[in-house]
Image (cartoon, rainbow, N blue to C red; front, side, top):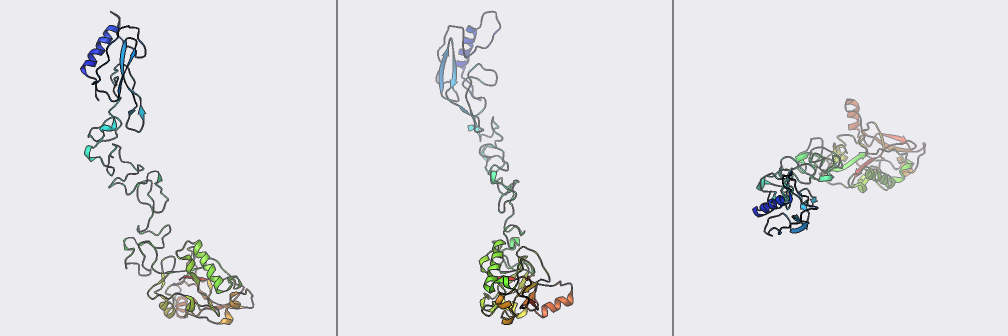
Length: 380
């Protein structure tokens, strides 16, 4: 703390002596008023103070005060108080070292820490001599992964938690939020589980998605193959699937069929929403059938033994125009349509083997058109 010079101290002592009555108990003079009539010269302008210096004469005494507020280092300012030295402050000085001394390596008033040249906004003590803390918008290396200040949020995907650690995000190895897949450091590489498909750096499947509709429809509810396509797209949109407007129903009539309408990329696998591969690509699908049933819905439910409207052969062609519920426009119990079976329990070995060998996923039985059956929806 800086103090006034010797001349001011001697001058102050003289004033005190002249102001006190002889033989009485000494007391500090009031700066607001005085009963003495003597005056003194103003102190030299070279006397060090922490602000611009002015002279104020009140009666017989002269006091030194600063003309402006002082920075306390915490973002607030306080005005100087004039008056006698009480041991902690004096006229013309601050009540503590200003934070302009932050960085001198000594802990001063208003400072939480001071490491001198080692003050660092990414270290334990910031360049403003504040201790690093979660929520200060500064990332403390080695202790915090991130810091979004007041925007730290434990529930925000891709955000920073209130403990200043990364929140749920792509490449952390956990499927969450809007992700389709997440293999951690293996994202974007050819490394992936044997029953799954590759996952890119954006946590999206490198595959075409196929799901079982969570809704059921009578034959007439479908409103033709094009109407069924719209139903698949609506479910995909509601489920927030990527490329939702490109989904089509695995369904045939006299004008439409998967063999005619589907995209047939070689080497691009088909996958369920749960990440299980069902076929290696289009050719594998129509030549060898499914390796797993399309049993997972747009809502993530796994449903075995569900009947599905198809009207389609294992090769993706129309099965029989007479067995399409009047081109998927009739809900009459007198009309029939061809249906498949979503999947069966693999533990029932004989049932499973028959489902695989006979391609029952698309080619299982006739159903009357008044029944509510599901759809297979496949991304194009």
